[in-house]
Image (tube, rainbow, N blue to C red):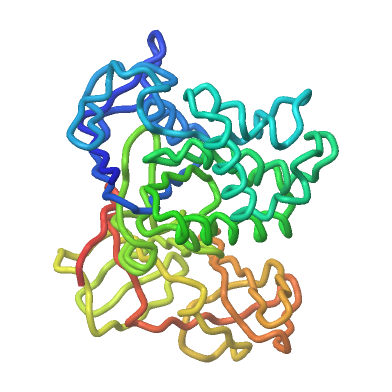
Length: 356
C-alpha cells in the first residue's frame, strides 16, 4: 500500500519561489506522470517527495505518516535518475546489490532480489558487465533494477528516457509499463514529453510555472483541457489556438471569414479563443468554397499519415491531418473548414475553458 498526499507544498531556493502551493493525492498502485515544460517545477516536486530537498512550506503524508522530516533512506521510496547514476567501478550485479546491502539484508535475500529484478528486466546475461560495456537502454534498465531490489513502496522516475534515442525510448517505455503491471507499485514519473505521459499514465499532472494546471486521465486532458496551456501542451501535433470574435450566431476570424455555429459559449459578443485539433480541420484548394483563408507552410510526411501546416491571415499556425497522397506546395493558398462539434472554447482573457 502506498498512498501519498501533498498539501500546500511550497519550495523556495533563497529568493526564488519554485513551487507555489501544490495540492495532490496519489492512490495506491497508481501510475502518475508529472508533465510540463522545462523549469515548471516537476523534478523539484519529485525531489521533495524523495526527501532529497527540504519542503519550505506544506505537508507531505505517506500512508497517513507525515514525512517532512523523515530522511530519504527511511521513506520506503526509490528514485531512478535521468543520468543513470551507476557506479562505473562496479559490475551490474554489484550496482544492483549496493542499495540492498545498505538496508541490512542477508546475502541470500540480496541474491534473491537481484535474481528477481534481473529476470523482470531481462538483465541476466549482463550481470557481470560494467556500465561502460552497456548501451544506454541497458544502463537505464540497470538503474531501474537497482531501485527494484529495494522493494520500495513508491518508485520515482525522473526523466529516465531523455538520454535515449527514439527507438530505445520506445523499448524502455514498454519495459516500464510492463514492470508497473507486474509489481503493482505506486509510480511517479517525470517527463517533458507529453507522448510518454499519454501512453504511460493512469493520471497526468500538468504543471506550469510551479503550479498544477490540471490533473486527470490522459483522455480527459485530451478531450476536455481545462485551459489553453493544457490544450496546447497535450496532443501531438498540438491543438491550434485561434483568436476570433464571437457574434450572435457564429465567429469571425481576423481575415474577415465567418463561421455560423450551432453552439457557442454563454457570453456576450466579443473576443474569444477557439481550439481545434488537427483531425477536425479539412483542406480545400477551391478558394471560392466556404471556410477560412490560409496558406501552406510545410508538410510532414509520416508514412500512413501526413500533417499539412498552414498559416492563417493573423499568423496562427494550424496543423491539419491529411492522407499521404494529398500533396500541397509551400505558399499554396487553401481554404480551411472545421467540424463545429470539435471546437473547444476558451476565454480570451485568462484562457480558461468555456462550456458551450
